[in-house]
Length: 180
Image (cartoon, rainbow, N blue to C red; front, side):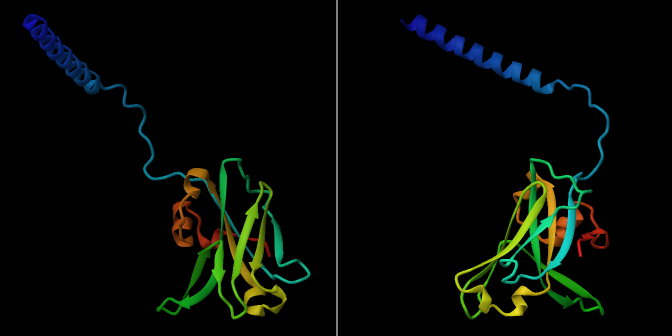
């Protein structure tokens, strides 16, 4: 009985040693390095901007057609940002303050939400509230500026601020298409 136990232990050691050697040999092998790649990230994305009014006549909703020179793929994600404020940059200029939708505000009447939905050809911007939107002041309804970003799906999962987004997809604010 002891012989069988010793043989089993020896076999286990041989198999273990063999597995380690095979692992080392396989991980030490190097294949062709392939052609050199480019540094950095290559994310193809597009951004466009629009200013809209939300009124009772349009149902507090605006349907925007995606510009024809922007192709939207099935796997793309669309992010929408609201221009909330413009503040001084301390050097005589200004900085835009963008907030990603959905965005919630609390005017005196209750809760207000700026939201959106989209298809491959359009984006709908709309207001939702737990009160009558006809009582909402023009500060929340008139001249509301939005930036719409179309990104590959693997990039769209993250919450990302507008400046980082533009930097990542290599788009200058001066090159953003304005629909107005």
